[in-house]
Amino acid sequence: MKANKWYLALALGAGAAAIAITISGCKAVSIPKGAKAVQPFDKDKYLGKWYEIARFDFRFEKHLDNVSATYSLNEDSSIRVDNRGHDYTNNKWKESIGKAKFVGDADIARLKVSFFGPFYAGYNVIAIDDDYQYALVAGNNLNYLWILSRKKTIPVNVKNIYLKKAKELGYDTDKLIWTKHDK
Image (cartoon, rainbow, N blue to C red; front, side, top):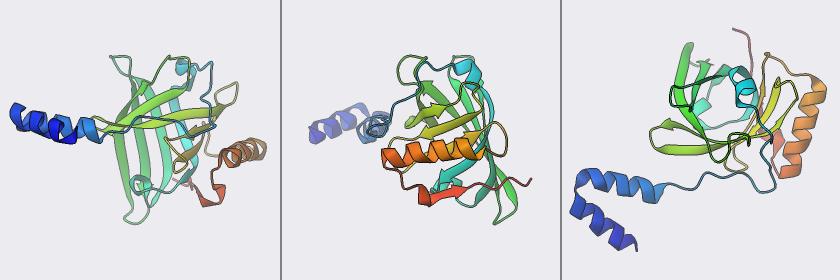
């Protein structure tokens, strides 16, 4: 089957080859085993600014503190994702603009997010309070986890509930980086 894709791509030209490689290289956007996305989910209540309270370290957020994400609607009904953080190693602000789309129904908090063209990753809100002030967000697998808040801090009881939920799903919460907010 791989050989057939390759020959088809060669026959259609270089542009098609890039598309074929991209399609064959993408994995399905998923949710960690045992996790359930929030339902019902109110997209409009989720929009706005969130502060990152904790995360697993990964290369795109390496050396960042003062991290926030602002969600707003695009004209095409997708969600604009504006991530911002301060790189403390070179004292510069970094910003990354992406797009999120619902994986299924808009009342289920399973989204896919892209910052790099056609490549999407899972963004699953797996816990949120009734007032949409605190959220626990899982990626595709147990390597990605975020705790978010509308303020730069989070109440201890909410933090403990989210940590317990993450541990029950198999996350190693000892690996969380607690984001500093001082700027």
